[in-house]
Image 1 (tube, rainbow, N blue to C red):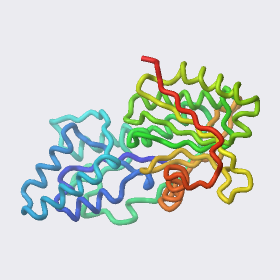
Image 2 (image 1 turned 120 degrees about the horizontal axis):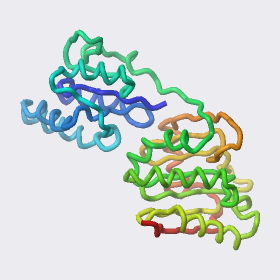
Image 3 (image 1 turned 120 degrees about the vertical axis):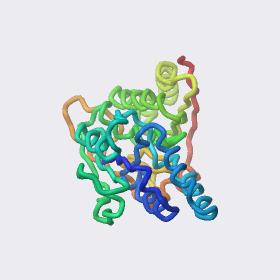
Image 4 (image 1 turned 45 degrees about the horizontal axis):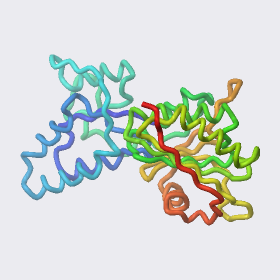
Length: 296
């Protein structure tokens, strides 16, 4: 569902080339550029330094615009005695990257910038995975890497269900290695508090004291959406930079069960941001609680 591409710095030879390439990447495309090798961004800036002033300024503006949500850092071996295309071919063979784009023709089967066309960038595909914490955490890893806050919409979430709290705990643990420090959960009041409001708060507090780390916070919004046109049903995790739709709730199943995952299309993402980030969902917020982490 998410692919990593290596792109040789030589490909970024003009503002138009830089813009064309970067616009093919991002969470909703299901593609990211790996900063490969070490010092990759510096090498791009060196490529741009020879451009006329106006072109260089445009290129640097594009680079600043796209770098935070289209580039990922990963440690992949690079042998300085080999050329870039040879190294990329080895990384691809070892499945450390999915595709590569080289600046010039080569003997290693790596596609060059001049050879790529729209067919090279295939549309992102939906995926299926076994519903367990390892697979869920892997699926959202990139979203956490590019977001400071994520929204979870699951009308059926309950702190009394171990299969659900196990997944939420795994998400918080995965986020420790990323810039994402804030989680906002929207769930249905009547389901979340079916054992009573006091019991809900007790279980939520216990969960947060065990699983929230010191620089994290969790906000839980309990909504009454009965009879509303935007009544909750689908399950999502998203930020303004992208998201994933789950065909089942954030829960680990006791037996092997597959769940369908799909990248959220830009139009739906815009709608979700308006509903939940901008507060236009139209539901009654029965209660809202925020807990901050105390673990070190």
